[in-house]
Length: 150
Ligand SMILES: [Zn+2]
Image 1 (cartoon, rainbow, N blue to C red):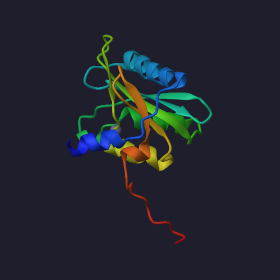
Image 2: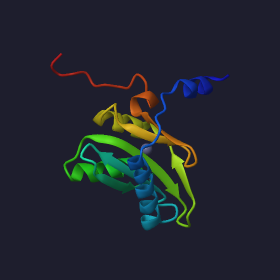
Image 3: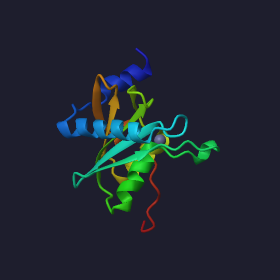
Image 4: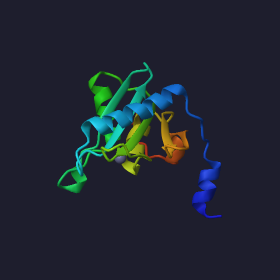
């Protein structure tokens, strides 16, 4: 058994709720609506503590470091509406022709999601067998800035 198997076996996986299934559907619809091959292929949907859903689309830049992940776009969408408390987030790749894949967040997104709340659920696995885990379980020993008060 390799380290990844041990990690996955010890991960606290939670079954999806109906509202989580709606979140996946919202990401798929966004991926279809905004699909532009090579530029906008990954959509994200985020549910806030107020039960609102905000979506975002990945933007591929000519200069790689300027790429914006779908999750970041969804968080910025929620922030633009004044919402900072997130319950769950998902990212879905789509080919614009009805094929989809569920994606795990990249390391940068894990950091950013955790900056808002380490209790936020991330939907991972596959579209056939999705489950959710807390972002803190995907990013143990997360970086924290030193408090200015200490
Ligand atoms: Zn990312």
